[in-house]
Each structure stands twice: as C-alpha cells, then as structure tokens.
Amino acid sequence: MFEGDEDSVSQAGRRLKDEALARREAQIDALLETVPDPLYAVDQDWRITLMNRPAAAFFQRDRAELVGRVMWEVFPEVLGTEIERRMRAAMDGEGRISFESESTTRPGRFVNLHITKKATGGLAFMFADITEQRAAQQRERRQAEEFRALADNMPALCWMAYADGRIYWYNSRWYEYTGMALDAPLDRGRETAHDPAVLPLVTERWEASLRDGRPFEMVHPLKGRDGGFRPFLSRIVPIRDDTGSVTRWFGSSTEIAAQVRQQQRLQSMVDELNHRVKNTLATIQSIASNSLRRAADVDSGYRAFEGRLMALSAAHNVLSNGAWEGADLRTLLLATTEPFARMRDGRVALDGPEVWLCPATALALSLVIHELGVNATRYGGLSDDGGAVALTWSLAQPDRERRLVLHWVERGGPVVRPPAATGFGSRLIEQILRAERGGATFDFAPAGLACTLTLPLTPQGPALDLQQPPAPGAA
Image 1 (cartoon, rainbow, N blue to C red):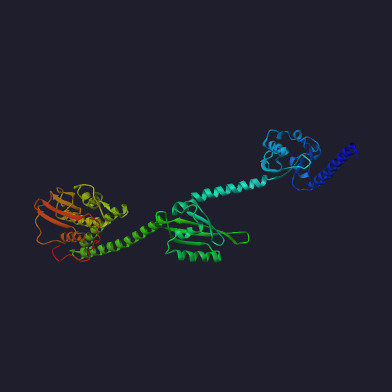
Image 2 (image 1 turned 135 degrees about the vertical axis):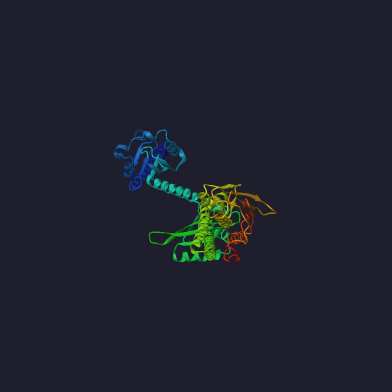
C-alpha cells in the first residue's frame, strides 16, 4: 500500500469516527429534548446547538430565535458576570461545574445550574428554577430565627423533645439558670436540674403524659447554677401532626418564687388578721363588760363604752392607713386626742421625736390616752375653760431595749386632790400597760395631774388582753 493510500484510510477513519460522534450527539440531544428540566447546549464557538422547551419557556424566548446563534449575542446580559466566568472555566477544561445563582436573564429568579463539557467540544447546561424553593427555605430560616429569638428571650426555661420524650433542644435561659454546659448531653438536663427527692414523682407524671398524650403541668423545684432550688411551674404540651399523632413535645418552666412568697405573705396576713380580729373582739367584750358593769347608770355606761370604742376605732384607722405594719406616734396621738382638743379649742399640745409603734403597742396606747383624756374632761385640766394638757415624749434605752417615755401633764384646771381609792380608769391604764410590759405612775399634784407612761418599742408576742376585770374599788 502506498503512503497516499494510508493517509486516505486514516482520514476516512477519522471521518467515520466524527460522524459516529455526531450521530451520538444528535441522539443525546434528541433524548435531552425530552428532559423536563430546562436544558440547552452550545458548541465550542459558543453557538447554541440545543434548547429544549422548558429552557425556552424559562428564558421566555422562541427556540427558533435562539438555536444557531452565538450565546453572547442573544444573552448579552451574561457578559461580565460570575456566570460567564464559570462558563468559560468549564469550556477551558474544568469539566462539570454546579452552583446556585440569581439568573442574569430573569432578575429575581434563582437557578441551580449544572455545566458539563461535551465530548465533542462545547457545553451542556441543565438548570432548575429554585426561586420558590429558595423562598420557602428563607421563610423557614426566618421562622426558625424568630422562634429562637422568642424562645431565648422568654423568662421561662424552654425545651423540646421527640415523641418518645428525648430532649433535643433547650433555650438559652435554661443554660443561664442551670449552669449546664452547652456541650453537655441534653438527656441529662432533667436529672441534674431536678431535686432528687421530687424527681421520681416528676418522672412518673411525665411518663404518664407520654403514654396517653395528655399535657403535663406541675409545680416543682429546679436547681440553679448557684446550687439553690427555686419553685417552678412546668407545662409540657404535645405537638401533633395532621393525623393527631404526637410528633414532639414543647415544655416551659416558669419561676414562681415571687408568687409563692406573695402567697405565703397573703396567708400570713390572713392569719394575722384572724388573730387581730379575735383579739379586738375580746378587747371590745372586756371594755363593754367593765364599762357597763361599773357605770352608775346605763346612760353613763353606754357613753363610757362608746368613747373607748371610738378610741379603739381611731387607732384602727391609723393602723389601716399603714397597712397594719405599725403607726406613727404623733399621728396616733392626734387621732386619739382630737375629740378632747376639739372640745377645748385645741388645748392639747403635742411635742416629741418621730417614733414608730408596732400595732399592739399602738392599740394599747390609744386606749390609755383615751382614759386620760376622759378623766381630764371630767375632773382635770380640760374640765373648765382655763386648763390645758401638755403631752410630751422621749426615747430611753436602758440596757438593750428601747422604751418610750410619755408624760401627760395637766395645768390650769381645778385643784387636784389625791383620790381616796384607785379608780377604774387608773386600774384600766395599769392593766393595759402591764399587758404590753409597760408601766404608769400618777402624781396627783394640786396644780394638775401628771402621769408618766413607759412602753417597750420592740415588737413582742402577747396581745392586748383585758379579759380579767380590774380588782373591785372606787370607780
């Protein structure tokens, strides 16, 4: 065989090979035409050789207008973009490239583009419009971010569990309160935060909820990072799918220490109120008994009882304004002496430092001052137009107990003579003060009665008790 004949055979072989490749490409192109995803192809000169119907629909162009033309002529907006750079890189030998990008021909639409280099040269492009999918993913991300922001900023400790109760998420408040490490096993959170003494009951009730799918609610203590236990109200609710099956559980634990303290305080106030009401009724009963039994007649007895009752009422008003936590001494004395001062044009002078009285001391002192005022209007410094009363007080601190020293001094009234026997008013004053660990001294000087009262200012237990009447004697 001659040399020229060999060249002819070689050229014929290459021609047959090229024709076979071309037929194969044509078959592949015909097959790709049936692919539902957008697909097009270009040759090595960037001339569009194939454009299936989904691709033409995406580009919103007629296929006849595109096939056979150079890509940069029909899509000039691609020039100078990242997509062009990646296309040329694939053409230059990088082979298969896949990436997501916003479409340059359809701004606002996003595609997932796959570029493959063809065996005969040129490129094949297959892409999917992922705009809606991307938007859905973004919505899911926003919802997840909003949920995390909400859950992490809630004051409650929150967590989520699978249908079988296995916890897979805690909010940041849980970690802040418990001190649990971020990399600690999530299923150990319940055991480490719960009081071991209460954990069996919590577990029992939680397992019952898992079995029957009912919500869980319970008050129980949880341990903080400082090691102390505080009361929490825990609620766990099931999350169900369209068939009603439980898919997850959402739990929250809200600290109720303040509410518990408030409830205890309210209960204490109710108990204290009950105690005070009983004592007040006992005091009124004793006042009524002594006032009426020792009165010369019903009318005078009624007036004595009414006056003492009004003194007690005035003290109650002052204490009520202070939420029964105590009373200011000056305010109490103004309320108690107001009836006598009004009768004598304000001739009751008050002077002394600021002093705070506990409720029991305030009630006792109001009755004592009332008795002194009644005696002064009947027989002493307020019984005529020329007399007056000076009511002064000071604080003494013998040993470790502060004491109130109060002086009642009458002047300008009738000449005073010592009584032949201790009257009921004096005995009542002494009895009231004894109940409060106090005392009273009386100086029946001719110029006017002077009475010195002493009372401790430290809160003490015994309540005002007038059940036992004074010993018999002159009224």
